[in-house]
Length: 300
Image 1 (tube, rainbow, N blue to C red):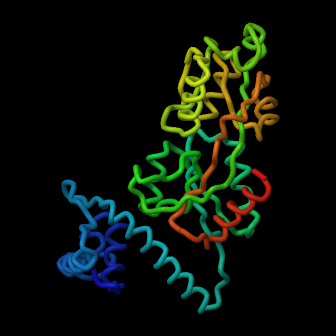
Image 2: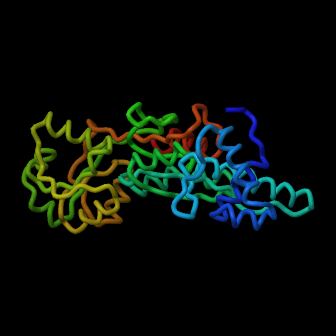
Image 3: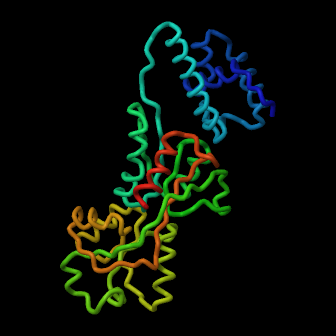
């Protein structure tokens, strides 16, 4: 692949992707469809991969096409902004900072971690997404997001070129509705044995750590539910369906918000938190603010 792209070819691709067909792009650009087809073929040849798949009469972006489109959007938006500035128009609008968080992470911690990014500059437009670990790492791989938050560090299993930035860790606290807590016998942690339990799904590192601790200590709760979404798990816990755990650093917030009581704490199990980005050395100001605040303030 040549290092230099032809920006005329890229512009034709951008218009085709925006319009959804070569014919509509040709009308907008006042050139023939054959010319556009030829220019697209040259761009694909230079990139070395197809940018579109044909679905009936329509064109659908390939994974590479989606990646190229995102960069093209930024390139031509910057070009328009430059033209406006040169004509004396003020620069307006916020820069987007797109973050995907693993669904099982407590929303309170996600907020605490991301808040500093909003203080870096008043014009940051924070876009928050969430999902399973594999899905959000796939978004990072194709540059759909700037940063991923998770408790599961990136490893060779995921086949994604990105880098872990360790933020900190916390022990875990166990919570139950008062009606359930009053029925539990024995001291902590023995009271967890055969108790109804609500847990994150096994894709999350903290679940794997809990399972190992449970096995090592011969404490086997009755699993009543497994959740990808931490908020949903807490809602079931609030109604007395089972014991659940959360990081100790948000113990007060969880107790207050869900009207549950702490039945014990474990420092043997540490839930670790990571920001994952495409940068080995963080230069993005919002990512840097997140990492520095987490290490110096939240998890200090």
